[in-house]
Amino acid sequence: MADMPDTGVEWLVDAAGCDPARLRDPLALQAVFAAAVAELGLHPLGAPAWRRFPEPGGVTGVWLLTESHLACHTFPEFGGACFNLFCCRPRPDWPWTERLAALLGAAAVTVRALPRAHGAAPRPGATPAATCTA
Image (cartoon, rainbow, N blue to C red; front, side):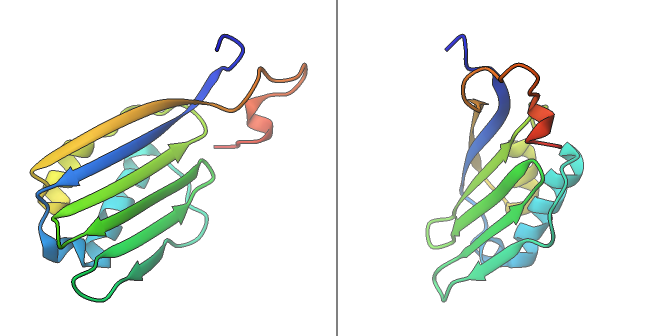
């Protein structure tokens, strides 16, 4: 993929052994979103959207960012949560394991960081900033 430059990163995160009460609480999940956005210097477009499902279900949330999006899906009946953060430009690693342990009581966290290419090399004169201003 020599002609496919890595211009972004996507994190796929699975947390297990979480506190079921926190996985049902949009405010607890908002704290995760707020910490990631602040600590990574991301730029939200409006407020996050949340959907709380009837018991024993959890919460789904999404926050549109100028960089792309942050989403989560929780499964309190299994003690699990899944997060997805996509940024159109490289970002430093975020301490998912430590933050999810502190904020959700996660006992185990698996983090996969995927470099993302946005297609073939830019056309002459085009820059990534023309389509992603973050």
